[in-house]
Image 1 (tube, rainbow, N blue to C red):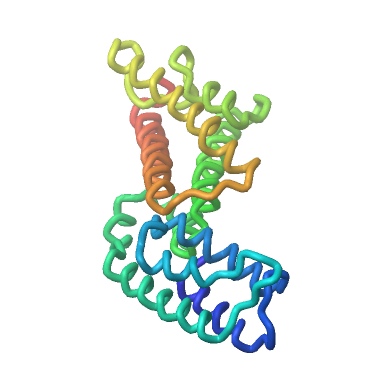
Image 2: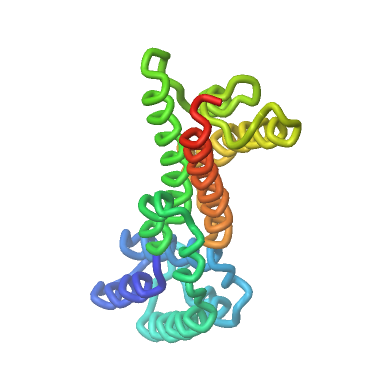
Length: 230
């Protein structure tokens, strides 16, 4: 949801003869607006306080043109405020792994933050599954948290990052096996099974985690090319 979409929804309300609490279009606008305000941490602004005072909260109320005008004016003010605060995400995106950008970038830009995160970690799971199938075609398919431990286990890894005969290498292997498995369990699985709303900042932090894991897979493949099955 973007603020431009909210402004468009509000302008559509002008075409309705009488806007009451039970109006479907008003319900959609109200829910989208309040979600947007809190997702973007705008609830302490003077603009939101003014907007909130004009919204319909009781079934006996209805929205008059003057109130709608005031809401529209304040939405335009919030739009200008957000534009001033807007982050140049292209600068950040250059550090995100291409495969994560491919599945998550547009969703993130469109404001579908939780979907962007879910897609990123699903892509990691898919890539690990495919690599396991390619390297171990005669073994049962792996998936999810257990699959991460199977592929990156410090004892007998299918993909390893460095020499696990050294203490340092063993620590890296064990550590990343836990990070891969923990990320699938703590980040992907909840997103896949619940309607969760997260902020852009929260989503971006998780996309960076996903990006690091994708780059670690690249490192493991490079190690395999250089050292064979070692």
